Image (tube, rainbow, N blue to C red; front, side, top):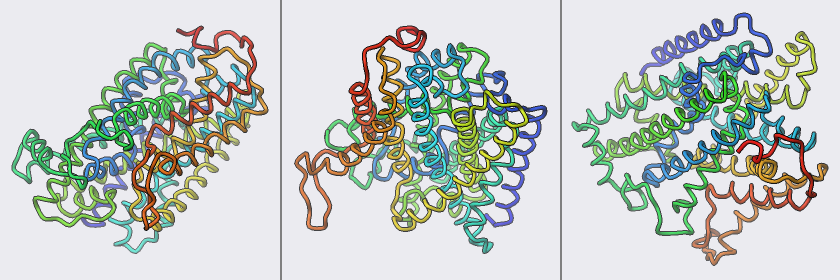
Length: 513
């Protein structure tokens, strides 16, 4: 692909987004920005949420992980199913009954202002970090395969990328996002399917034959690339219960306790529509993730068959082959796919962060419309600048650690920052006790720090051996189950600072079962 072709595709793509934004934001006010006037079609929300949930990191990192883990990532995806059922049956009815705009308003009604602000602050921290890291990947791919050839410095690409998101979200907010995300998900899903078909055709096999080739190919660890289930080593991060239950709680935390994805659900007309959205979203997400893993196996089968040298960083495997080996059509769809997946996640996060901060910290519900508009603009710009700073910080970190697996990094960030939210909501939903409020922030900050040291020294504490090179071998290694431990310790810490008391009605699971 030539830089000119890439530039034409990107310009056309963003013009389409801006047109959609214009059409959906006419006569928009702050209520439109935050709630979409609660008129979003559930099927459109469900489809668009795929792009938001997957992001550019999934688009690139999940196929790359097949080289070492086979299809073991699917264990996490199976856990998602159970997590989404919990969201549909417990959390969503709670949010709809309380009629909240920010889901963290629940904590205010259940406990008080300190717990409310603590939960909202952890969302802001987690979503800002996670979304900016996801956005970084898109900027790097564009830099490597387009702007380096044009002599454009990286900082210009980063500023332009974030600026474009700001332009098409600043007015219509979540109403615009529902439509742009659905538009972008079309390209994300189609690019995976088309690239897989192109690989199969280049190897002269059908999809069934391609899967057979993946099954007979070996990972760097010596097992089949099609292997999904791992039961043989309880200490390994790939052990099935760790992955499955880690995936379950990741889904609950990163979707059900996340203002970004829940904000879209709350734009549906009713709880029934929102639940239909969640069930449809779950089905499509499971299928799409399997397609990503199938594509990952296909990439390595192709490289082994054709004798292609692959980059050391597995995150660069898909873009390298798509741009250099699969032809123009594959390159075009890869470009559309990585752009769609990255922007669908980042634009949604920017809108949710603006919503959360305005509602949770600036008391928007008590302000006049003119004041709301000016403050919303300032907050929207502020989070855009925060994205930029984290993008540059991530680039510095990855340049210093070139083998960084971004999806693992994002899940690790989530396990520490969503743990306190998991503990807070679980405590409020399952127990009728009153918290000593001023101690809540101390518990929610202290527990992730404790978890960090537990993870860091777990091998030493469980019989691991320190090798001469300073690395540990053997012993227990934490994976995604760190989120569960974090949430559990937060729950116990909150119990320690609580008193027996019956909370306000309609705030516990007993009222919503």
